[in-house]
Image (cartoon, rainbow, N blue to C red; front, side):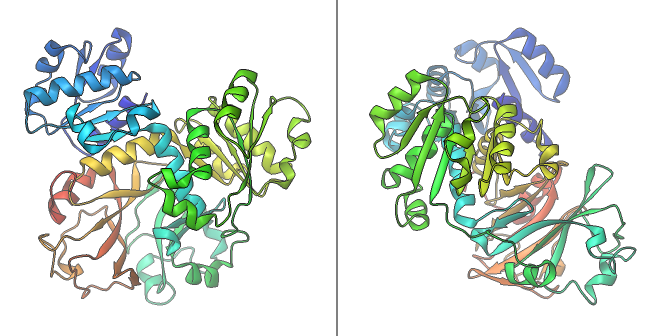
Length: 457
């Protein structure tokens, strides 16, 4: 349930949330789970919208599974409030193609297309490169790698403050996984032998520290997609016709020539339908769970294998199987975090959570001060966010040592004119600078206040 995920994320950021839910049982469950007002009603009814005081809200999010209900409810809210901004979730590609003028006529300020958001995440990681223990950030200018503390026996038992005086010059321990949760480390954090460490730095500095990662930047020439689903089709559209999409420049830069694409699905009618839409791709009506099928269709020759079916459990299993049979890289599409704790125990190179893609897009829109999530740690409610300093921000011209950040917030990096700088207490923040922070979600509101800005700006 995307709406529940977004409501939970907004509440974690200390925002006042009112949730309208039509299903009585779901409404009762959510009322017990979340610290917010829950109204059991139909969100397209004017009476329900008035009861929720939508006319005084900063934002109205229409996130049901019905495009029609979402659009109607946004139109009603827009007709009664000139200040409430609206975000609409749509599944039908027709609506996602509406121009800004057409959107405004429906009372829509922002459109969110879940399949598009997930496909966009995949396009980004294809561009940046990826491997199981490595996450490129900022177009590959930075990397986040996971290692276990025994890899650095000389660090175990020392505090980060002690290490910074010698070793930690060109990389940062951004987070420590301990006892199943995340510790945002400060100078007094002492490394323990059982810790898992998230290490952030430039590719060169981490290559010097940990060695290069094989195949990180290899371009995928042969791609196999399992599942004629909304996400599978959106990814196919991105790869086949990038000129028609917002991500077109990125995809065309990534693939100088169109990749060799195969798509597999167990439903014959869907294969026939897709064959009439897309030319130049291989479409096979097969069930990948049947014995010997993946071997027969040539999975071992694939540079990239994407499991994008409707079952996240099957996607993970199929992606794991594909990797074990010789696919160079494998990606599994999931809907939630239920199986992500298996990540380090499996050979799947990347997991893309479709709900997370939508949540990130919504939060980036409603947050103040241009704050956006660039990495979400699955072990806890901690994330790496970045923001661009506005010339009018209250921190412009301040030295880093004078920022009054919450105790559990760690400054991760500073970029000036696109170049990474090693920050010190004397580093001055200027308009246009980008900074990265490791933070618990509960501190987002405080960061908005510190760095200033307006919603959605």
